[in-house]
Amino acid sequence: MSLWKKLFGGGGAAKEEPAAEPVEHKGFLIRPAPFVEDGQYQTCGVITKVIDGETKEHRFVRADRFASRDDAVEVSLRKARQLIDEQGERIFR
Image (cartoon, rainbow, N blue to C red; front, side):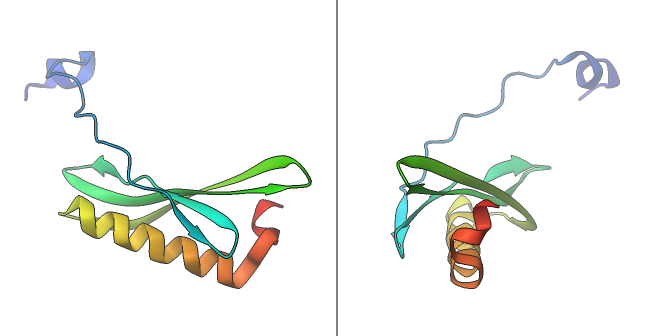
């Protein structure tokens, strides 16, 4: 791709990926959300939980990158479970 296309947004729109299925873990809802960065899928997700009638949300991004979206989804779920197991509701502070 030429320098001008990079600078001025040429080259077409980013490919829209279907959302990964949310997963429940210990009362929290995990939504894996890997995104493409430099041709690979980067680990990313959102953890939510309703506390006292209010939906709390924690977004996370990790440096891990994968050629496969499925691998990135699996690692995103594993990282989210680890965060929940280690921090519980403190994750929302």
